[in-house]
Image (cartoon, rainbow, N blue to C red):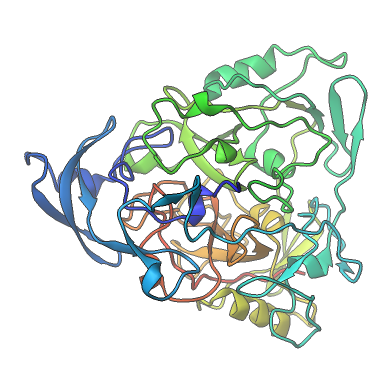
Length: 457
């Protein structure tokens, strides 16, 4: 049985608005039921229109307006594509499972890129629906992740419980911590760690943690981390008291970073939250540093990695830290994934014609986590829309009809709540209309499909 990825399923679970490990009911949903009794009709305005539903008690969230209605699953069409409520189970597997894939780790025809960003390790090519032969230049879908290879991941097992990353210069704890901790306790555990003859261990920042991401990952097939590291999904006990019925143990790989979100967690002033990366579902988001948010952690030592060294070069910006040059300003237009690839392939800027859509690890390196509106150093890189999300060239392995993007503006639910934080990394359908996807996942991620583009070379 293949476990299904949370972010790739749609649900109208009554718990979808509930307060979970990562947050609670969107403010609009709670306000719509203030003073109302359970079962009362309710409604509120969301970014794409009016949401109608009933007032329900949600775990730890009080009364909230839970939408009613029918939802369309990604990748399904026809009469069988519409279902009411939570999707029916069949032999333990959800109907309409999003298509995952066994992703190759190498493409022998990939063009080498002069970069100091560890490559995603994605070696398969895709169209909007599945794996394809990698296209030729000038053909549809040319310019995607697998067709360019940056710094090939290179790890050395030191034989003492540590692993050295020969690209970033960082040394990592090799073992996996089966006990999940709050971010505060995880930071303390790293600070007190003595391993490999060293005592200067720390909790990694989010760019360091994301440098380990391996986008051969696909839930039920392999984790989003190299096999040199120990990593194990938790047992069923991790779901005890979990308000999100769509969770399964195969996606509970959230791992803390030390990077604190400078915005408001779910729009709630005073709630301190930190970013995490999920090595079982391949996404970045943020969660409160204390309370019920107990997650995995992996310690690191070495000089901090991930700080940018930007220098303006005409209409582009060179990051001397990574060796990559970036389009300084987006063109103000949103596109689907195929059109985003084509735009960068055709771009001529500052005398160069080798621009391309960045892979997701490259794109995340230019996030400025000291900021959130947007999460970008706008002294060097500008955004036409401060709420914008930007496409990467990386297909998401759990549902290969989706590709990864980075939120430089608030990473919102369909109701407008900043559920994941500016600087989060998620995945969107590559094509279609947002009307076909009211939202994704129990936290009801907004679906845009048409995202902005910033090219790299």
